[in-house]
Image (cartoon, rainbow, N blue to C red; front, side, top):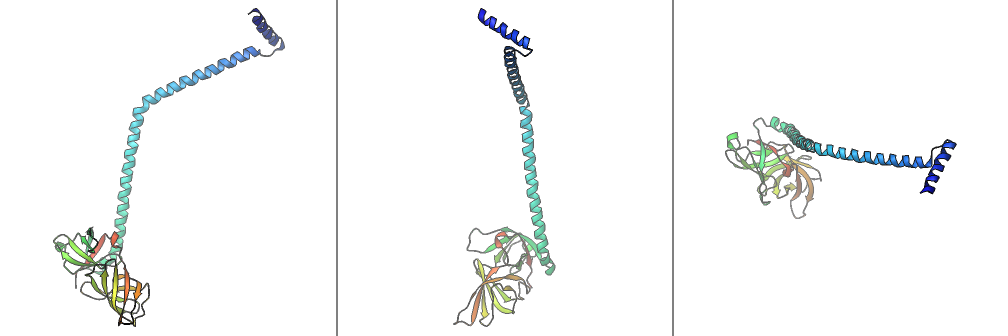
Length: 254
């Protein structure tokens, strides 16, 4: 112990005479500083944890408020999308209402669960002036005709239904035929073999009981010819997308 004490004294005296800090003093100071930093960090962590515990109820309340506000914004966004869609449909259907002054505007409210019957239900009936055999149009073209009319709702047979027949003509060339329903498409029958039909030709209604002439039925996507027949047949893609049909116009029969 005397030797250690002598050595420490010798180091201190040598450092003092040289005018430099003692290595022993520097080491002790460094250890003390590190200890102070460690203690300060521990105290800060404990203080921060305490503050976090104290603020937990406030954070939970703010989080709930943000979720509620986000849900409200999502609902408002969905409503705006519906309003924009309704406005577009209204603009698209407006020419039909101008074309037929006695037309009755309506909406599709039901589709049949079975695929065998190509029909829809609309929200207008005899109370609104709808009657059996009235024609039904959409913005894109012909939908079908009324087959059942109740007081407040009616059933529409689509042009793809097997019972549907419409006098029709090919716009280019004015070739006559009969548009018949074929489940998912429409067949244009009884077209003369001499008629030079083309893929993409537009087929419209002729003047008849349910429709004025010129309402678009569909476009030709396939042509079937037979050497043994006087007529040729064309397969049409309907102008109206029935799977997304919403707004329609009922045309009172002439």
